[in-house]
Image: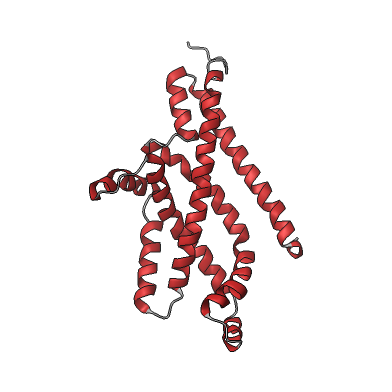
Amino acid sequence: MNSFSFSLRAIVPYLGELQTAVLVTLAMSLATIGLSLAIGLVFAVLRQSRSAPLRWFATAYVEFFRNTPLLVILYFAYFMMPVIGLRMSPFQSGLVGMTLHFGAYMTEILRAGLIAVPHGQYEAGHSQGMTNFQILRHIVLPQVIRTIYAPLGNQLITIILGSSLTSAIAVNDIAAWMQTTGSDTFRYFETFLIAAIVYAVLCQVINLTRIYIGRALFPDNR
């Protein structure tokens, strides 16, 4: 009968690589949240457009990428983009796939925020001679930010956890470190446990930071 003994000795030499993997995970996640916000804002506005073709186009984007597994999108970005002449690094391919996937979810979050703004405020802006862009920037977005702040924080946590799939296309993130270190040391339990703890700590820190910033920005929401 095999006896299991818990030991971190074999993993200590790999902790430096874990630090790098954490930075890669954070870089991927923060870049994804920024780019998916930009894409989400564009498509959220298109989904509210008076033009039927624009609404259909935005809806098709959202439905396609929300109903396609992230791993499939990552594989497509990594393996198929070079076929059409777009050669990217694993990190860039992962970022493209993550952005397209989570941009669809961000579109719906932002659209919910836009819908929450009373239509009368758009009319008030027009009556003051404001352009659509000025109305969006000065009247709509400040209210949208308040509405979507909590879902946005939750989405960032989802993105961090989802970024673990980029290890399947050779991105050297925490999940990749876990797989490599486990196979090198054969200490799978300890390696997987460390990776799980790191992910949990990252998500908890982000959640607490979100709460702290939210209380500072929106004190009346306490």
